[in-house]
Amino acid sequence: MTRSVLPASEHTAEPGPDPEELGTREQLRWFGTLWVIAAAAHFTDERPLGVLSALAFGLPLLAYPTSAAAFGLFVAGAAVTAAMALPEAANHHVLSLFVALAFGGAAARAWARRNRADGRGGFLVRWFQAARTPAMLTLLVVYLFTVFHKLNTAFFDPATSCAGALLGNMIKDNGLAIGVDPAVVWVAAIGTVLVETAILVLLAVPRTRRWGLLLGIGFHLVLAPASFWDFATMVFALYLLFVPTRVFAGLAPRAVRARRIALIAFGVHLLLSVAVSLSGGASANSLFGLRSHTLIVLAWYVAVIPMLVALLRACFADRGPWPGYRLRPAWLLVVPLLAFVNGAVPYLGLKTVSSYNMFSNLHTEQGATNHLLPGLVGLQLAPYQLDTVTLTRVDLRTDQNTGPVSEPNWVREKPPTTVPWLELRLLVADWRDDGVAGVRLEYERGGQAHVVPDALTDPELGEPPAWWQRHLLAFRAISSGDGPDKCRW
Image (cartoon, rainbow, N blue to C red; front, side, top):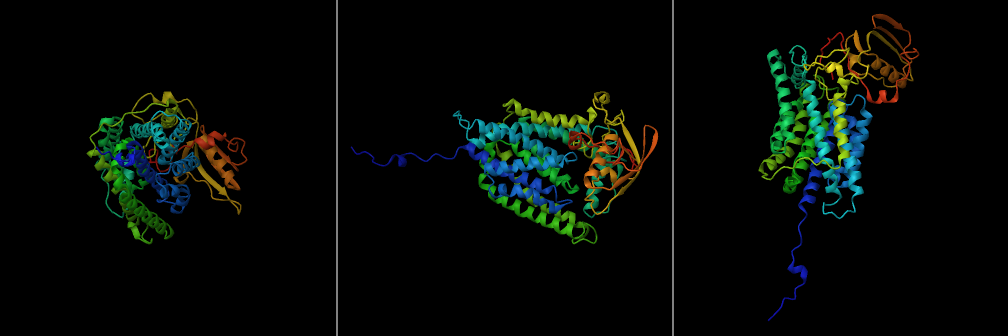
């Protein structure tokens, strides 16, 4: 009787890669790529050269897309960049900040538990397992408030609705010369609220998430031509966290090609943005004429659509159950809680900027609100939106020491412009930091007309606000010569 003398290694097949490890690594590849693109896309509609700051901490992740160290560097950079954009950060910057906080806290937990032999995978798996639910809940909170803020009379009025303003901008920016019928605006306003509500509900329920992804991707692809590609890309990145890791394990063979297309197309998107900016913008005299904006949008479409199509195909081909929410560690749930508080602050009497209420037509100032839900004014805890001032004239004196001057959106509206008193004090403090030589103001407050020769030295206006007010609070105009319900962002 003969016996085999082959080495044991030839009798036993090499174990394949752990599906959870492989899926998490591939999820990081897709998620990190889209998050870096979202960070860079923030600059391509107005300040394309500013993309260098995003690429400074994003390029290592693009070069090493499954590296935990490269991803950690990007998370830290995204948090710092978003924090520096406060208090007037765009919605996608606020969302990016909360997501970075979730991943930062999850990284600390995964590192603290790295030596535990409990069979729950390596560091990267632990990291994503801890961060996934807080990040998912944060996106759901954002959808909740983007819907809730729009439930006001001005958003459903075709004469003032931001739905009409965005539709008009989309048409104009892409070189079309057609009018927008009020009935179309009304349908767009109703449709926006219904679609965003449906996305929220479908994503919140694990069994219907495939359909939530499909509807959400389609919705944000439609909005992108209105210069919303940065917010859309950030949302697409977060959609990936709703998908089971096993789906990404199956996507691994297709990741390289889709990612290569995304990076090449987004590079073209960046180059087009820089060329248009240097040539004077998307005007008749620019390098590409009136349709330069359209070319930039098309390049972005080519960058993201192949990845999204591959993702959707894999999601609908998958027949397994989709996981629910992981509520441990419970302390990481403070991130979506902070996101919720940030969305609620307009009703609490605090800020009216960077609370997911851009393009919502919402008003909560002067002891009244245009929201359809009665009684919200009674929630106000802070007096900042009650004390208002109407500016009729602003004269800045500058000299050779004056740097770039702070100019919030409401400064560009036609006077007289009504804003909270604290907002004017915050702006005066910014002007002082900018090196403005002097500011002469004429305004009305409490029914009294005032003329201030120099706001920088005025005992009330010149008093420095608290540091937390300067870094966290900002307000939109309540009304101006452009109208009380003008679409503002």
